[in-house]
Image (cartoon, rainbow, N blue to C red; front, side, top):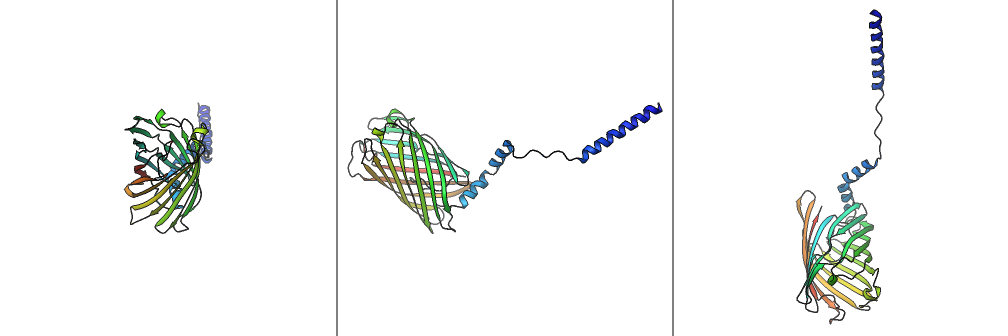
Length: 299
């Protein structure tokens, strides 16, 4: 019996010593750099990255028509009411706008919604228009108002021919664009030049060289009046050699604080065709005039 008790005590002593030894050795550190950790970190720091991206560029307002070279994080809805040269009216719901995100400090990705069109008075029709489903911006150089007040960016947009028969050109369009802007105090000028290149039916559609320039002035805190010139020149296709030019006066009001990061901006403008002076066939300008309404929720 005594031997058994001594044996049990010895065993208990050995187990205790082993446990103390285990406690003295720290547990292995968790693995770092795992994919799940990287993804979690990326999204945890999303808004810090957005703030960094926007702190190093001008803080101008996005114009009504011209795509800004700035990086924006927002959801945008536009509404167009067009009057065509043949007497028809087209209401364009959402204007092909959508969600704009800043995934890195120098990039923006825009995932748009397809526009919904309603044509009345002449050849009535309704349905989806062709869908510019993706636009990617790469900011090349920029400086905020304290360090030069300028920006240069490159874009690439892709449009899919998903539209109803009345509103489609039946071909994908690839549109590379160069954009730039410069500010002087409360005044700024932003501009773009790009070319929409069809991947099919080149002899019908042709290449469309699109250029836009906007002069914008910031008054008080919330008022951004502007005047834009919007030009399209066709090379090849049925409109080959033709040119249309619009002028767009308008105003954007914002950014109104809604709470947290949320800011609301709204605006409107009236676009009028300056050239050609008479209606040409195929229909050029593509419309005579239109009202433009816009709403943006930035975050």
